[in-house]
Structure formats: C-alpha cells, structure tokens
Length: 341
Image (tube, helix red, strand yellow):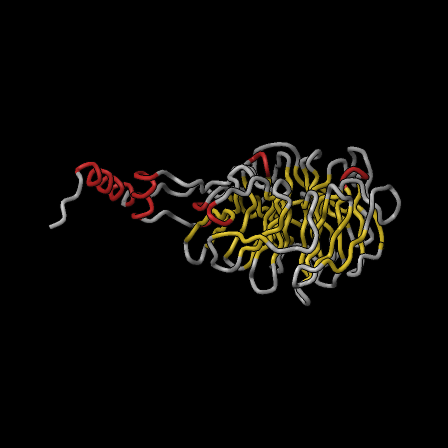
C-alpha cells in the first residue's frame, strides 16, 4: 500500500476542488472595434489579445498544477514579447522577459517555454521566422546566434553558420530553397545563408544612399520573393528583390501620418499592403505597394487596439495580423477585412 505524505494529499485535494470550480459567466460582448471608423469603410477589425495560455483555451492539467505547487511554476504568461509567428494552431512568441520562446499549441492544449540546449536561457530572442517544414528560426541578438526549433522539439538548437554574426535581429526564410536571410544590425547589412549554413551573399553597408543601411532591424519576405527591411536610423523601409537588389524606399523622420520615427516589425498581406509597427507612435501603419500611406491604427494605451512600444509583426495566409505589444505584455490579433484596395 502506498502512503501519501499528508501535505501532498492536501495539495492534490485543493487542486481537485479548484479544477472543479464553476467558471464565471462571460462578459457581454463589446461592440466591434474596427479601423477606420464609420462612415468610412472598415478595413481592419480587432480579434483578441493573448497574454498567456488561458487566452487560447489552454489550461493546466491536474498533474501539472500539482507539479507547479511542489516544484515551482515555469513562466507561462507573456512578459516582454518581441516577435511572433503563427501556423495553424501553433503560436510562437519570442520573449526576452521570459528568456525563451513560448510555444502555444491550441490543438493539443499545451504550452512550452523553449530555451537553448540544456535549458540555457535565450537572453535576447528578437526575431522569428517560419521554415517550410514547420520549423521556427530564432535570432538572439545577445548570443549573436541563430537557433532552430524543430516541430515538437523541447529545445532550440544553434545553427552552424559559416561566419560569425555581430548582432542578428530580423530573419526571414525562402521556403523554396531554404535560404536564410539574417539582418546583422551591427554590420549594417543582410546576410544570406544557404541550406548548409554557407554564406551565399550579402547586401547593404552603412550609409544613407539607396540600398545602404543605418542600423537595420527587421525583415519580411513576401511569397513572391520581395524583401522589406526596416532601416531604423534612416527612418525608412527599403525593399529589395530576392537577390538583394534595391527596388524602392518610403518613410521619413517625423510624427505625422506615414512617418517612421521608430519603425520595428514589417509584414505584408495577400493583397500586397505593407504593415509597419512603429514603437514611438505606438501604432501600426498601413501602406500600399508603392509606399503611399493608407491607414494608421492604435495609439498609446492599454485598451484593446491600443499599444505600448509594439515591436514584432506577423501576418498569416488567413489574414490574421499578430502584433507583439511589448510593454503591454501581450500579443494583439487583428484581421484584415477589406478588399484589395
């Protein structure tokens, strides 16, 4: 006969009662939040905020809750999100505040906080990108490395790259040939690696001319192969073709519509609209393919649809827009509901 320690029995009994507690009724649904507001035609709608597993319907099972009480609780809430990617029921959030990458699996009802090998922390994960086989690439600017999280893996494994990185930030993947684009902020360039980690090419150098950078940060690759790079201290976004040849630029220093005083994440939707997160404006700005300003949404605040130093941005094929709302400790999810205009 197994004799259970009295303290453990009390803990388990308490957890059982907690797990059986009657949930509170849902609050009344608020009116739809959209941009722009009436009488203009709505183009973007607010969907939800995600601060932790419970916002995705992920609970902590009986044994997990018992383990938390006995051995300590691993951080599951989002602390300081910097980047986000989503694929199906999976959501990944790079979180320097938690020193790892959150993986939320809504289908399996599971949350994992992924660290480096041996449980070593990821002190500054700032960039995420999806690979063709479901893997997720992570750049850590403090460790000066790029890691990969394989599907179902519990750890992020460092990639063997042919050259040392100075300060890797934004990353993007070409799913056709597995080329990896890495923005090296300290070197003011974008490095292009082949599947085996060989340095295939690079583009950019420090300067203010076309195709030059002044502390670039994040990058986005469209399905057609066009690359957008946030050129932070030149206060602009530049675009390049898939071989790194300069195409265009837009933006500027200021605090008006279309200015980019502190641009961060960049992404495009299936209609070619360009979305830019700006940390100083606490907003998401939308431009057309020619770089003309279309719409701004957000502003400083804590309410739904407001931001506080937002950083990362991801748009999936389902038109869902994910914004890493850094100092509000959450990811906000929006949806594009307009047409191709």
